[in-house]
Image: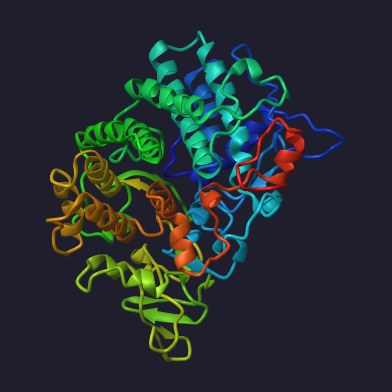
Length: 503
């Protein structure tokens, strides 16, 4: 089986070559179409799916969106997109961060000021919606694996489960930003370009839930101690996606049950917060995007200032000065909070001066990955991009309990996280007080990991939070992004825009 740890970039390139063989997408007059997802399967059980190696190669293609690559071209429709977990401003990860109070940037004023509309993010600027085509590709792979007769049922079940989790993850990402979209999950539709309406949220989320629950029995529990398969889908990943789905839809009882299941799977908090982001495959990680020197983690380069010289034990050259943590968010941390050790509040410039809040520094530096000391100037580093981890499970469990029964039984879970941070335990709160305190605690613990927007939306505070920060263009409907206008044009009235936006 191919290794995700040792050769993630080679796998990505291999996946692109395979996708060129797997799919061709129809074009009208040579124009690339965002809605085109007609799949002509070049590789079938008759001519390709002959061995486990063949099946593995097919499944690897569906991992392409979940990488740290700067960009990739969908060989089916020619759409070029930055990978979902790349550190560029146009990605799923960064749009999830920059629409909140935890970070700021000068690189996309439409995003930070809530002045975006259907025409704002198209072409190269839209690096989320185009991945709807990979849902169809996953459906094609699932359909083909189902027809294979030359490998054992156990092998088929494992790869079917893995691809279902990948499809569910893609569908959740799209749901998070756009609500339900007309993704292709029925193999009978793969050879058709007929445009179908967007499904209801109930139907769409039922598909995600079914993919995940049906996959869990046929997957390994986790891969934290497995170097060869680190980065593949697992039971832990499927359970985490279920938890995310239930939390987003405020299905508190299901969220509580799922979180409690994850607590029995052997995950644990790292004793030191900083080590979560510096130690590969540590036991707190449920999923992290594997990187290497050719497909690295660029987050540190993005956040370090252009005149950076040193801070603490880190000495290196200039960064790209893209993102910062506003002082108002930094002030949410208590003085003794050890999580602040991963945030730079003062540094020495290349001119030998001290830059900090008093000298006019616009915000703190949310470095997160502090292990870059002694590793040179970057710009990229070989730290896996942290996506899901056990601390979020504990905080979600506390929230789900509080929303059902109040905080009495929830304190134990949030206080495990606070104890690790060296701050005092929560106690003596009402349901409403605990809800507010937990929202802040999630922000402190999970800063710049892509969860803050979801948390604010779930608690009905994304827009009020933005307005309080002076983003007066923020409107209640902006808890979802608009369907891109090129999709709407091609949808010809069948695809309905998210409420509040006009094309």
